[in-house]
Image 1 (cartoon, rainbow, N blue to C red):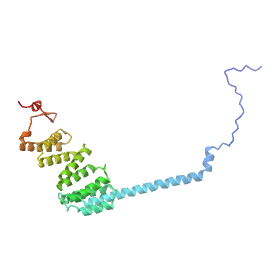
Image 2: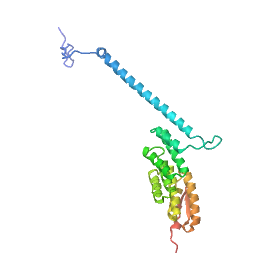
Image 3: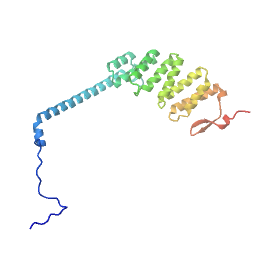
Length: 254
């Protein structure tokens, strides 16, 4: 007599197998059938990777070669190994030959500095402007912008220089170039007999503890300005190395 089947226990009797419309193909069979295509694909990828490595290696070699040539063009100009400063024309020729490489931008920047030192301010400005166009967010962008303003300043284009210095202050407010631009604007204010505007910039720089150069330069220039214009002198209170007007200075005299 057979034992009764529990209503909760599934039957162990195998059911009919489901028929499939297509035969099953296992992985090994698929690999065997597609072996030639796989080998070709792997070969293509390998060739591509190898070509990329060769290109990068050649680029690195080109960069190193360009840096070496730039060092040869810019030997030391001080000390025992001092040599003749590089010619701007040679540096610009080098920059043209190495367009797109970091060494080219540095060469153009040095050339602009040489042109400025030679008194060719308009030519220097042209090169600084080229650097800014080629790499507006590069490492030399703020210094190039300052170079443009300084060139205009040296050309006695005061209004344009003032605007260019302000652009440096606004666009690169957290960089050292902004400190130099503020000092230059203050100097131009003094030259234009606008001591109050100059004093405001010196006081602003005096509150910036991030730049020791800016702080010291501003305080020295401020002292000289107040010597020439004692009417602008007001009592100062120094708090945490930040100069602020004391309440007494703000009280009108009776």
